[in-house]
Image (cartoon, rainbow, N blue to C red; front, side, top):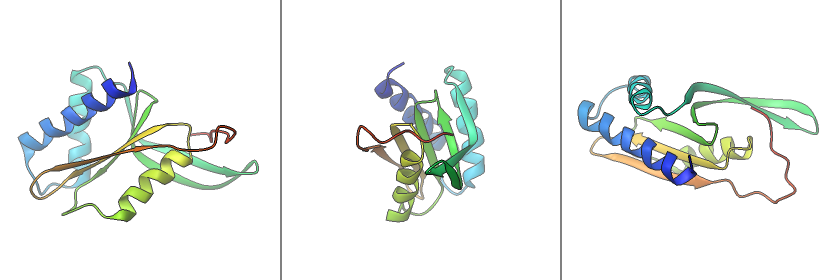
Length: 131
């Protein structure tokens, strides 16, 4: 499955969840609903995926990504009034810390679903960091 097809399916699931639940739930509730929707359409996803950050061969930090889909797309979920720059930075950090090239930031907001797509842009000689 290509990146565009995967991201379209993920976004479709987010809209389906929001249309059924609406606003006001915890992020963890939306995450569980996304898991149900992914299973229905056979999208392989790992939830609460640990990501390790290495510098010169030494682990210097770790993150936990909300969802890793098909080992190709990191999905970071939010359930806030509106997205802020710090949320986008968080997703970009996840992309930089891994070999995953595409990320989606999905907010189940007060009035709508907000989706932001990010692409990892690193020099070609930058080694991917392990998950």
